[in-house]
Length: 180
Image (cartoon, rainbow, N blue to C red; front, side, top):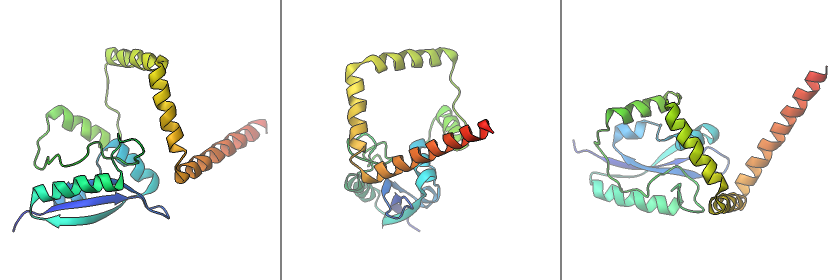
């Protein structure tokens, strides 16, 4: 039997579903629901409905379809205005790739929900870098622009609004209970 390649799209389970990840792989890859941390967070929050869009025995063809769908659905994380969990623009063709042991160890820790352990030195360097970024006017403007662009999405506005109402309600209830 010939090896088949599947191109699939992960959709949210909201009233109006949104595509958030496009992938390509074989049957085994199709069955595994974990992709990356961003993907897991979206799936946990909004649900996951995986739909196969295309099946072919020709891998380069499936890679082309994957790239086309990532652009069409806007699931690339780093493209301005997009909403999704694809870290690449697709077409990478990593079927059968073997990862170094450290990467596998890290991936397993993420799958189990554990955080990857960092040395104190690494934590300190990350902290210093974060403080420098927070003082950079270009970085601050970039964050501001990203936040403003999110507010253009009505679904984001409603979801954020609902979360804030719930947070304030919980805070108020906790305050009432502490006064009793």
